[in-house]
Length: 362
Image (tube, rainbow, N blue to C red; front, side):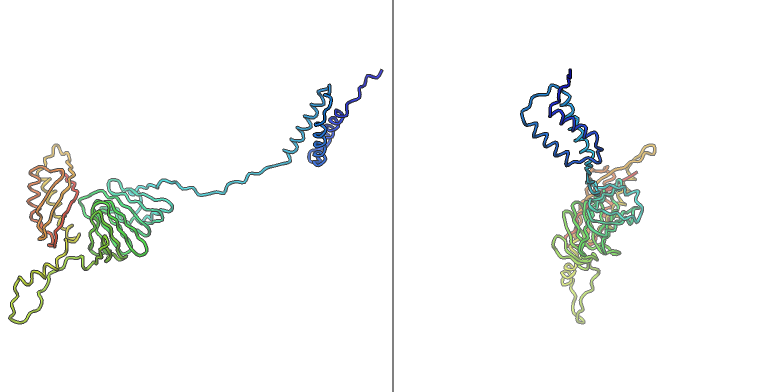
């Protein structure tokens, strides 16, 4: 008796599909025929059919589907485009040690500012798109600004001109202050936030004095410009020298009352920065000598004192007010006041007020 049971058409189709999938090599697979068969099979699957008693048919279908997806995945090789390389710059400003920079080093700030610090003396920061050369770094720090803007913070020092910025043909010198210098379009712009800044031509004594808060716009040679919108000129800013009396007829009187107004009109508004520094240097030396004379040290221990000296100068050039903050010892202050009273500044129309930080050592 023949027990062979005819296979259902659906099962026979699936077996044939598996045999076809195993017989054909993957590189030579007819994708169009496979797609058509799968579509026909999907259409047949939507028709109601009697569930096959054999689970092998469903397993064969699963194997065939997995093989098809595996072959499809082996055929497709997706590629990922790499992002173009880009230059990434730090958002924080660069910091450099100015005491290790070689003289003549050029410091450039491109997209971001660059700060250079000289420990205990000054810090200067170049704005983006600026360039400067470190020209001097001994008793005086000198920068040569070639392009852009530099902001400087200078530690107060009793010595004159401890920090200098040269831009084009101008020279900007300070004692202790916060200021900026910009070189743009053939002009030099100076902004003084704290302290005092002197401006003049290279190789010549300073002609202009800016006291904070102040701003100046100067020509490239540093000999003319404006301060807070007021035009200034190098020749007008300098104190006049001895004046000769105007010619007179023989035998005509020359009363001093007639010459006084002329002499007064020729006085500068205030002493020039060069005249002030000459007098201040004498006062600093005298105060240092008095401090050394009246300060007692024990076992060779060095004593150092920082104080602010404030002076008021009359139009005649005489000093009429002296103040130390914090105060010095009574003997030292009395000695210093006696010496300062002997110092004379250049006469001017309104006199001057001077403040300097002193470091006294014994």
